[in-house]
Length: 167
Image (cartoon, rainbow, N blue to C red; front, top):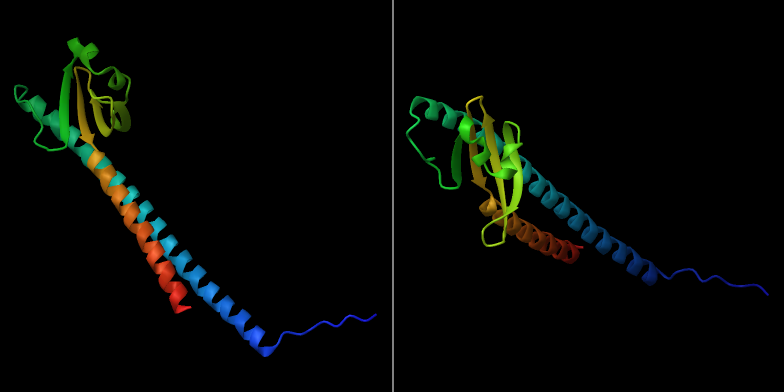
């Protein structure tokens, strides 16, 4: 018995080619849009982290110099930043989580008085007689990162559908 293999008709071939083109456009559009979204999120987070870290490092230095010029002046002139100076005699009064940190900028997470997670950056400068702390609340930054993520997911979906339609 000989079996006969049917070759595709020109109409079937066109349908398969059309399906491949449509699928190719959809995958290309989705891939490019997703790659752009991922790059955007990564670059924003990286640049924001670098800029905040550098600014805090400079601000803690300025805070210490200002304190040494006029020790009676209290406060930090920033909205999202709070400062603390602890003298040598009162190093034990520094918050427990902060005592063993080295000079520099640190990312910290702790519970606030309401039991909610508080995410912040802490700039630390430890001199022999004084420890300086600048706490930068990053909750607003975290909220804007989430909003950006939602917007980019929406953009990926919209451009994927457009790629499918163009295909």
